[in-house]
Structure formats: C-alpha cells, structure tokens
Length: 231
Ligand SMILES: Nc1ncnc2c1ncn2[C@@H]1O[C@H](COP(=O)(O)OP(=O)(O)OP(=O)(O)O)[C@@H](O)[C@H]1O
Image (cartoon, rainbow, N blue to C red; front, side, top):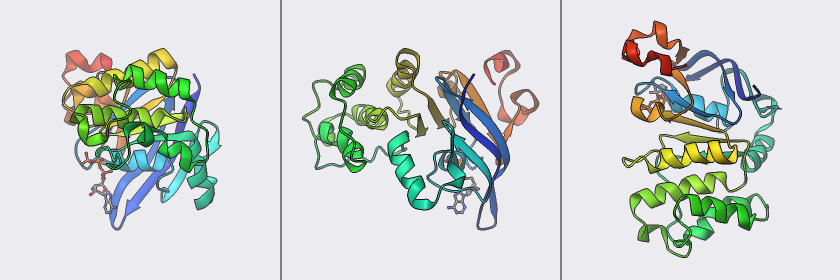
C-alpha cells in the first residue's frame, strides 16, 4: 500500500512541552484515517506537522512523495496550497462571499483554474448544489461544515487533513468516508470521539504525544470487544 503520509521520528516541542514525542507512523493513500486521543495528546500538533502547516523540532515528514520537512518556508507554503486540503474545527468560511466563492477561493489564491465538474460533484454529494449562491450564514451549521469540507477537496489535493471536523449530525463523517471510498481521496482526521473514529478505515491512537498500540493502551478506554476495529 502506498504511504500518503509518512512521519519518521517526529518530535515537536512547544516551549517546554513535548507535544509530539518521537512519532513514526504511515497513513495509507486512498484511506480514511482517524487520529484518536484525549485532549492534549498531540493530535492537532501531529496534523499541523504532517500537513506542513508547522515544522517539527526534529524528524521527517513525507507527503505523497514530497519531503516536506526539507522544503523552505515559502516552498512549503506553495506546495501546501496546491497539494493539501485543510479543514479546521471552526469552518472559517468568509461571511461576505457566497458558498461558491468560498469553495473556489483557495484555488484562486493558488492561481489554479477551478474544475467546475469536480466542484459540482463535490457540492452535489455534500447536498449543497442549490446553496452555492447563498452566504454561509444562510446555511445551517451543518451545511457550513460540509462546505468547509468541500472547499478542502476543491483542488483534488493529495491528502485532506481535517482537525475535529465533525459536527453532531454525522453528515461530515458520512461525506468524508464517501469521498474516500467513491472518489479515491485520502483523509486524515483528528477526533476525541471514539464513535467518530470508528467511521474511519484506520485509527492512529495517541497518548501523551505518542502513537500507541491500542492493545497496550488500556488508558485509551477501548473495550476489549471493540479492539479489533482499532489499528
Ligand atoms: N502553540 C503551543 N504552545 C505551547 N504549547 C502547545 C502549543 N500547541 C500545543 N501545545 C501543547 O502541546 C500538547 C499537545 O497539544 P495538541 O493541541 O496537539 O493536543 P490535542 O490532542 O490536539 O488536544 P485537543 O483535543 O484539546 O485539541 C498540549 O499539552 C498543548 O498544551
């Protein structure tokens, strides 16, 4: 299986806090991977380092064959805009733009011509086909989350990294899984919620800055009868 994202001995120290402690992990291409762990276990830090938003203190990150940690800052920014999709916990849609303008904004910033049929496909799957001319505030919270997901896929990125993307309804998780299974996309999602992680194909379990083996992590609180699903 191709590794879409590979972390080798990645450590990230914030001030005096070791947020990631010698993490080595591979995320396969064409799969939906959840990074599951309690608050403060390092999930967001892992996502930021893996996506090139931030640089690790030490260690190497490779995404779709690109040695991200070897890129200079402006090269890394350029590469990220073209090849990585990001979904943040707050959807960050610009309120004055229509949904359609929000979806194509990252493409326009990267000077990439929008692929209209791909965007129609994504918007249709997200149930947003007839909301493209609305402003974000005219959509329910769930619709705004779905629009943020569509925006992340707009450039057909190598990987979409989603930091706690799911709302209460589960529609975002349904959409992410569908985009992976039907359209061959690759998604890495952080979550504290075991039920949300169970919707992914694979789970990286985190505790105190490390990726741990679920079978040796009783602190993760995964009941024995569910453990076969993890890892
Ligand atoms: N910019 C920062 N400056 C200082 N410490 C930080 C910074 N970012 C993260 N940390 C610390 O690093 C550790 C891991 O944080 P991180 O946000 O990655 O965890 P998390 O698992 O995503 O948590 P949550 O589920 O609450 O989002 C925590 O102890 C956090 O306080």
